[in-house]
Image 1 (cartoon, rainbow, N blue to C red):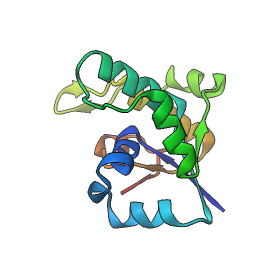
Image 2 (cartoon, rainbow, N blue to C red; image 1 turned 180 degrees about the vertical axis):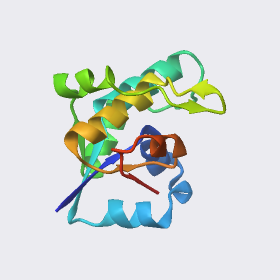
Image 3 (tube, rainbow, N blue to C red; image 1 turned 90 degrees about the vertical axis):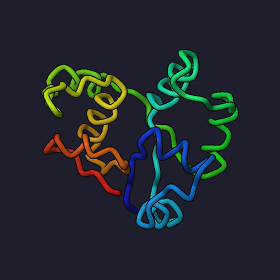
Image 4 (cartoon, one colour; image 1 turned 30 degrees about the vertical axis):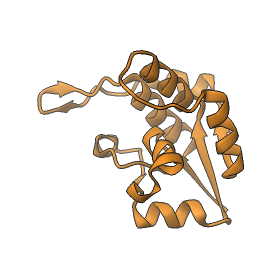
Length: 135
């Protein structure tokens, strides 16, 4: 059984715009031999971005949690080890701008500490040598 962590936007696309998912992503998620995880941090990211108007998503967090369970996706909790790892992550520059997104950095930390690939369309994850991004 192979484990995968999905990025926040992958969850959003899965529940509302599945046509945006890559073919490999669809295959991985639909393969019952795989264990798919969503980070608890993704629920926080959705709540924050919805509350500040950066994301328009009408599904409540509780409803989203139920959808996740219906799709046989497990929630990856935050651990002190993953939180500690964030302190040592480098701030890579992309077009002279540092990659400082706290949600991305936590997901990167979790992928590294849990030693699982992350499914994401976000190429910024490729800056981190210890991250195995799949898209």
